[in-house]
Amino acid sequence: EADIYQTPRYLVIGTGKKITLECSQTMGHDKMYWYQQDPGMELHLIHYSYGVNSTEKGDLSSESTVSRIRTEHFPLTLESARPSHTSQYLCASAQGANQETQYFGPGTRLLVL
Amino acid sequence: SQELEQSPQSLIVQEGKNLTINCTSSKTLYGLYWYKQKYGEGLIFLMMLQKGGEEKSHEKITAKLDEKKQQSSLHITASQPSHAGIYLCGADIASNYQLIWGAGTKLIIKP
Image (cartoon, rainbow over all chains, first blue to last red; front, side, top):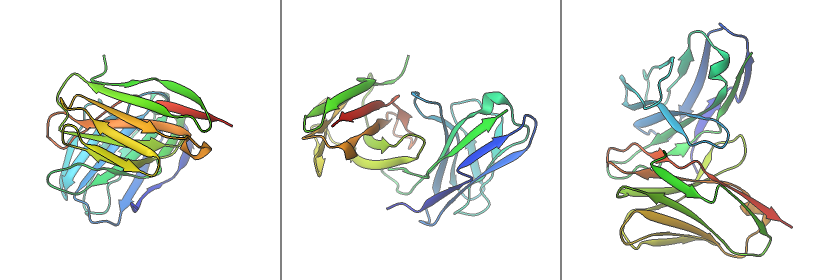
């Protein structure tokens, strides 16, 4: 069973606000990921990290930023939320050199008005 | 077009019946991962396949990876209401530890 947590689970916020989505894992995994998922659509990778002080942008262009100061923590920040940011955000982590079983948090559903 | 195609997009099955979901790639799969997702929640890992011809089972769910490693199927035997949800496949096609994803198959079980 994976121990990966996301807060908040649900967030309704006005346009222009700054928000931070939290993700923490207690498994000591080096790799962490942020995905965006819209209903009926595939997951899109927006950011990933292979360890402390390592962050990379994924395939989906995003106006968000991430940081990885501690192994267990990988927050995602939107400096100025817009209605187009409305989506579900999923955090995942993985450990292992040769395989990539990712374990997911419960997700944050974001609605920007 | 998607690199990883899942079919069908949705499926309604009578409780007790068997069903199959497919995941097809145009590229060789270095690893294929099956997950289940309940609406609005995170993904639950089911199984991972790596070798051509590999087959794994967990309870009433069996996943196979074909010999050419370009298609995987997920088979549920004697479906139950607890099987309802969205099934997603994720694939490592470049051996770079990043996954691409299918759009999911929504499974509804009719009592």
